[in-house]
Length: 262
Ligand code: 1HE
Image 1 (cartoon, protein in one colour):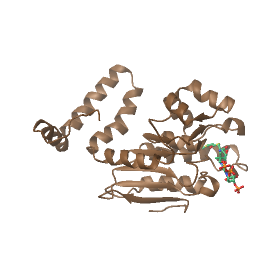
Image 2 (cartoon, rainbow, N blue to C red; image 1 turned 90 degrees about the horizontal axis):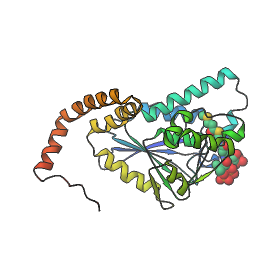
Image 3 (tube, rainbow, N blue to C red; image 1 turned 180 degrees about the vertical axis):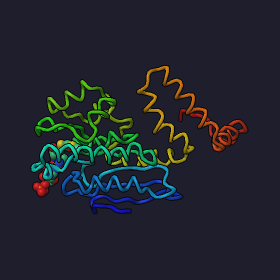
Image 4 (tube, helix red, strand yellow; image 1 turned 135 degrees about the vertical axis):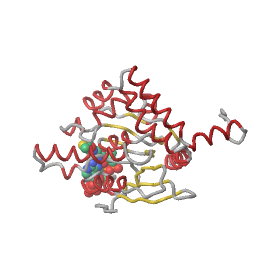
């Protein structure tokens, strides 16, 4: 697997090495994302080892990610800027539409391109130390890593515009209130919680996870009539898998866990 950076690592965890743990490992620069790191992220998802069924992304040090490495920005002309943004789009598409569901474990700064990366993941777990901002507004630039597409779908265009117009910083508890993440956990526990969730996700039938990653976001963007039709097609394919039939039989014959509120 060609990896262009030492600033990101991949390790496999779980009983069958089914969980990929991806670590942004540039703590001295607060895990700021330079070109090498973005390309390496893309390569990791494109070359995900066989047998991996879920992934976790987290950052080493005190912060998840400080966003774009601003030291690489200053000399770029318009054409280079266009291609640079498209490179981020391609890499983060490999995260969102790649081989497995991805859980982001967030702490400290989740800002700029760091929030864009977190937004490309399927589940966000943030601890109470985390804070969220889009400092692009005050740096005189715009988002370029897909943030204007993904972030409004989480919190609405009005809230995103406010973050960029005013430099508003959301603390964890308010970020959860507006929908930036699905889980808020005590400081220092985001990675453990993300691993717990990834283990649960990895135990799902692969076609169910595929439908959640690839059908659900498309259905959510379709007019209702087309959405109902796409849903019916996806439902028919997923329930036809031998694994689905076995799981339903297990429940009916008392071998599968019930839904429980505890
Ligand atoms: C960096 C970066 C960076 C830190 N690029 N070098 N992102 C931002 O505008 C956020 C900028 N960063 C910060 O506001 C702060 O660094 C943090 C709140 C994230 C962390 O603060 P702190 O006090 O823990 O660290 P620090 O002392 O500010 O930074 C430590 C070092 O990391 C320092 O370098 P040093 O050589 O002086 O030790 C910083 O310069 C360096 N550093 N953040 C480069 N971002 C696809 S488009 C996306 C567009 C964007 O993401 S724009 C938003 C960029």
